[in-house]
Length: 206
Length: 206
DNA sequence: CTGATTTTCAAACTTTCGTTTGAAATCCAA
DNA sequence: TTGGATTTCAAACGAAAGTTTGAAAATCAG
Image 1 (cartoon, each protein chain N blue to C red):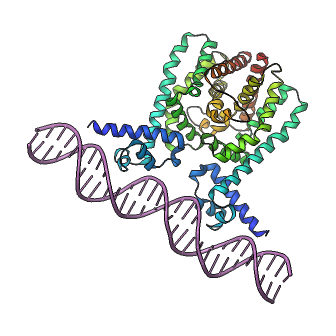
Image 2: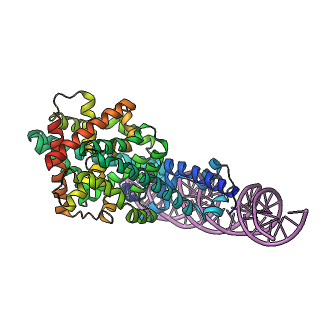
Image 3: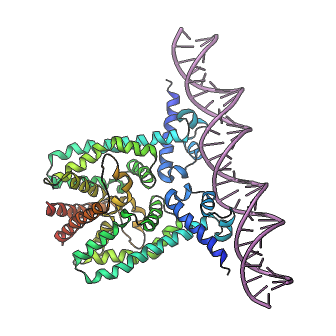
């Protein structure tokens, strides 16, 4: 295990993550990656066994970072009231709107996968997404204590989706015909609005 | 204008729409399209001036069909109560879950554009999406008559996004760890749940 | 039917893709 | 320092991409 080779690996991973997030797997060429990473053409095949292996590694990294981010903050919300916890959850969902570059990048990679899931991604999801969904289920359960398993699951997915339309389309929302500004204070008020609607919706439903 | 050439055009458009929806622009080769359409390799360049021109045409067609579908049904909801109208809106948003193949295909093409918008798509959106958003704005205005322009717009986008998480991820939701069945009756009850939460959320907010 | 126009076709062209190759350079334990 | 292993490098390979070409076929007005 030599150290200098590790910086090459890391340079490739870093460049690849950015390009895969920006242009997707098909839209990213190996030559574009090695150019951005300032490494040799053959380095990808040497270190990762090919474009596929590199992508697999990037995907794993993004997934690890995202779940880690979610789960660490989930503990903090245990002590809050259900309304505070939900507001906090939604605010964190809106984080990518505020130039959280790394987070946004990881989400973007997932967005590509949403359109056309890779086998690798499907496996990753089915094996390791349970804790992530568990956080959302626990959250809605505090509003719907009597609901059955299926309703809880639907509510959890619904909750996760509340912000995604804003996060996913933030570029388009800025221009016509919407013209929604999304600076820091705008995102704050957006979070308040969504929290308000969601809390009232779930409260009544109980 | 000769008629036989029109069937070639149409065969190409049909095959291309399916493949672009399934695999995206980059993932679809000209050779795959002509094979599916049973036409000659050069036909795409002859009739559409290239892969780009063909994609442009497919995108326009999908957009036209979607807005048309939305606007014709919007008139029918004018006579309903605001709750009925909203329930109807949400039910229609869930349509693609129930094997509305053509609709699903058009939506899928848009989903690819959401990840990485084409210049063509951006132009299309900024010039022709206003009536579409208008329907949603009119709908939420009946719940929030006193709200300002920006709040209405946010609420409209929020409303449109209510179902997209289910529609967009329907493949993954079937498998672990979620295991959500989405047959006809399940989609019905899903629509009722979402309508319930949204109506209560907006009603309280007023 | 005739002749000009439109449309189809097989084949080849150019470029770009991911990958392979084998030698040169570098590294590190002994 | 030395010698074997690891890592880098420039170059080339074969496959697949989008496009072009020019002749053959089909079409339609007159």
